[in-house]
Length: 87
Image (cartoon, rainbow, N blue to C red; front, side, top):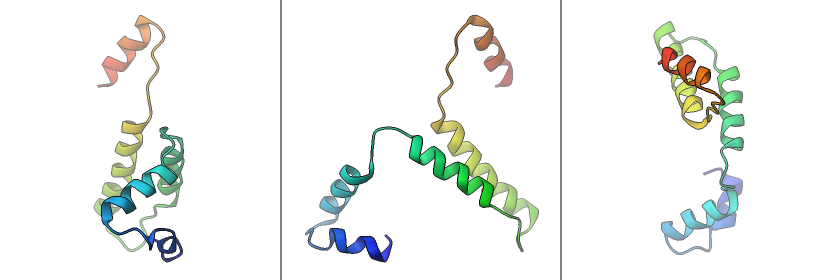
C-alpha cells in the first residue's frame, strides 16, 4: 500500500476491516478503471535491460489480463463464427 494511503486505514483493527474498507472505497463494480490501468501499463512496458523473453512474458501477462476483463459483445451469428475461428 502506498504510504500516503496508509493513514486512511490506520485506525482499523484487523486486516479484514482494511480490505473491506478498501473495496468499499475503490471498487465501482466495473472494470473500466482496471482496463485503463492495464492499457497504460502495456504502453509503459519496455524491454530495457531485460532479455526479450522476460519482456514478452510481462507484456503477455498484461494482454491476458486485458482479455479477461474486456467483454466481447457478439451481435449476430457471424460474430460468433469469427470469435470461434480466433480461438
